[in-house]
Length: 349
Image 1: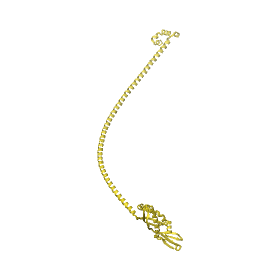
Image 2: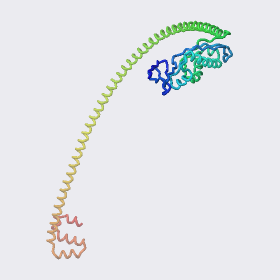
Image 3: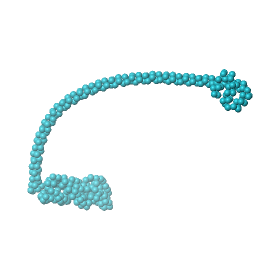
Image 4: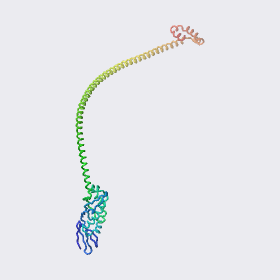
């Protein structure tokens, strides 16, 4: 039995009776029946340069110098591919293979981009090369850890001229900026002077407004005081008028009450008089009725007495004669009574 221990930067691939990958830990290998192979997982720094000048998209020949860090991936699938390509190989061999792939992809990206674009945005160039080379290196079991562009070189001094142009442009921009700054300073000074003058005018105007406002408020206060005084006088006069009116109304009410009492007294007196008159009238009618009754009674008695004194012959004669004759006969027969009771003659005449 053999005891093996793999460091973290190396993968031990055990094959034979078993297939096993060991990274950073210990394992058991059966001698004669199993073998152990190694694949380096160390970071490999590669200096990638284009061997000859490469034309850019704007047909300017340049050479590119870059530093790329790659390593064998520890992912099982990629590690299996790396074992097929770099088993027991030294890092220099891995670097030489990767360099060829990276240089080819770098040439391809140079041909796609303009010089000014590459010089102005190196990160974009590095990203494009990395993205373009990733599939090729992944097929070998390698990962690109970093890609840094060191330099762009051309034999026609185009990049230097771009720098000169930039310097001139920067100088121009600096001059323009200086002129703009001086202009802004002058404008700021003029603006400050104007603001100072405006502030002074505003202050004077504010003072005048405050004075005018104070005078206006004073006038308003005086007017309000006068108005309140007039209002007080009006209220006092109104109260006096109201009191006088209430007194007059009370006097009128008292007079009306006194008049009502007088009218009630007169009405009572009139009712009493009417009652007295009615009572007197009733008493008179009663007296007259009593007198009439007395008279009637006396007459009836007289008639009765007369009838008692009339002879049967006279009654027969009265029944056979006319009323005139009856009266004459009665008168003759009643002469003594006619004198005493003349009412009979009146009654029948």
